[in-house]
Image (tube, rainbow, N blue to C red; front, top):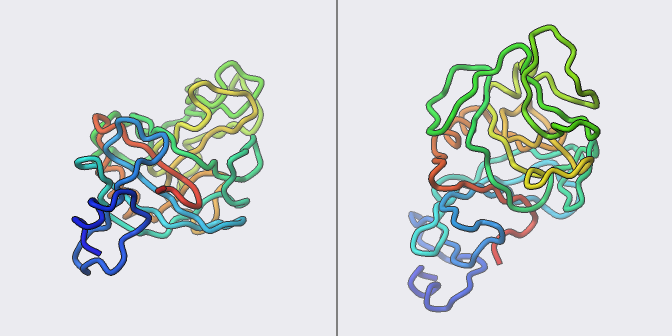
Length: 226
């Protein structure tokens, strides 16, 4: 099926028999993308799958055109859920903003937005009782943070957090206990605690591709295009 015929037909579920050199195109809207022109999709199988297929898309003239992927990605150890809560090991289903600040232990890999190089005292607050739940926090190196729970000492995750982008799940507004610290980060070779992970080479390609002015989103689920 040629792209012109697809556009004339309207809603598209998939391209069948497209030329081998053509990039797949999806013209229906993806819920929650708003004015975004960059989209990361993570498609998983039904059930408690811990792996998925990640693709990068750019919106042009109302249609999403794939620019990279599919790439293998890991998701949460308990799969993907539309009803995530703190500590359940699932990756949240839905469409979310990607934060404009990229974090990492390594030097800036060449991102187009802000980059924060992680250092001792950099935490992610995962304490549902804390006023800064699901937020980045810096405390003095060696000091005990004023929040508890399963809060992460980001600078100690020397493999996963060489680079990470924040998935803005449970962020606008923050709901205590609904889940925190959902990142797109370097693979450790297996399922995550709720994040999405990629091999480092592919993660770096993704991070360098993102443009804050494009209002990038990430969509995670079983079926993303209507």
